[in-house]
Image 1 (tube, rainbow, N blue to C red):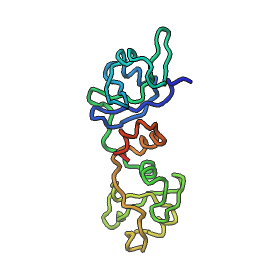
Image 2: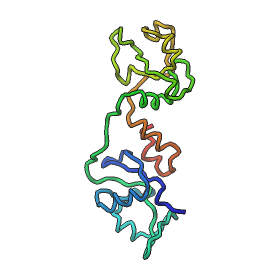
Image 3: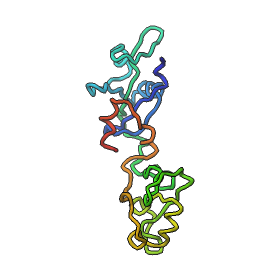
Image 4: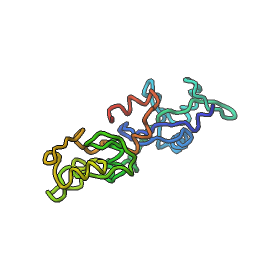
Amino acid sequence: MSWLNKSCLVLDQNWRAINVVPVHRAICMAFGRDHLIVDTKTYATYGLEEWIDRGVVDGREIHCVNFSFDAPRVVVTDTASRWFKTKVNLNKSTVCKRDGHRCQYCGKTFPESGLSLDHVVPKSQGGKLTWDNTVAACFKCNVAKGGRTPKQAGMKLLKAPTEPRWSPLFSKRVQGVQEDWEKFISSLR
């Protein structure tokens, strides 16, 4: 089995999960010396040469001509992250992902094309397009609610909308993750 196309978790300098890349990409990142490979059991970090010198420890073996080493499971940057965004773009796709493609009024699940964005406090009543005022709603519920608040329409939200602490697009990639990633991502769920 080749481990080169398996997934590797990328952490920023504060050890926050920021990406998932193929193992071959993680090795290139570590080769560039701005990322270190993390031993997920001891939290020790290694440069690529040190990691290779460890040999095969956990059975995720990558074979080279003259040596073998473990495929990295997690890498951490030791420089300021250039591509970590603390803000998630607010759009229909990210709201639908945050809400699990579920109408926040009736609770039914729909494909993105079957959902619309609903302003909890309607624009006509001063509501803004913000994470805490926007939910995914099926067309039927959105029309039934109309230009009213949920209370005025006699409807109840399944949960209060909030801004995601990390990207819903990224969270989709780490579902069903490797067990040793849990300690790095569990606080973000």
